[in-house]
Amino acid sequence: MNELQADRPGPAADAERWLEEHGGALYRYALAHLGDEHKAEEAVQETLLAALQAHGRFAGGASVRTWLIGILKHKVMDMFRREAREVLLDDPDDAEEMGEARAEEGFAPSGRWRERLSDWGNPEELLERGQFMTILQRCLDALPVRLARLFWLREVMEEESGNICQELAITPTNLWTMLYRARMGLRQCLDRNWVG
Image 1: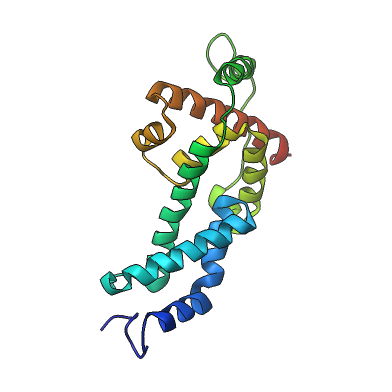
Image 2: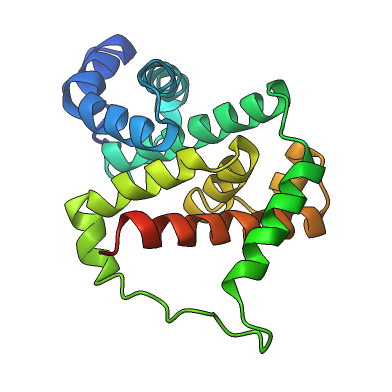
C-alpha cells in the first residue's frame, strides 16, 4: 500500500492532506516560476485536480511532494505555452537591432570580451540564500517579454528546444539568436546589479 492509500477514506481526504502538508511548497515553487500570485494559485489548484485524477496510478516510487511538484512543473509549462500563444510577442526586427548593438559593445575586434568578466562568487551559495534568484528575476523582468520567456523555458524549466520552437512557431536559428540576446542582456544586468 502506498503513501496515498494509507489510513485515508478516499481521494477528497488525500487532496486535503496534500494541500495541508505540501500546499506551501507547491505555492512557493509556482510563484518562483510564474512571478504572479494569482497564476501560482491557479497552477497549484490545477496540480491538485490532476493529482486527484491520477492518484490511483501513483506507485509510491517517489515522495508525494516530489510527485506533486512533478505535476506542477507540467502545469507551469502549460501556462507558459498558453500565454505564448495568447500574447502578442515583441517585434523581432526591433529586438534584433537592439541586440546586435548591445552585443557589439561587449566585444573587442578580436572576439574577446572588452572588459574582464566579473567574479560572481559561489553560485550555489548565492542560490541557497535566494539573493541571486531575486536579482535574476529583476533582470529577467527588464528583458523584452519574449526573450525572458524563452530564456526561462529553455534554461530554467529545461524545456527541449524543439518543443519551444514548435509551440512558439519559430525556427531553431531564431530561438538560438533570441537566447543569445537574452543571455547578453542578463549578463549586463547582473554585472550592474549584482557585482559591486
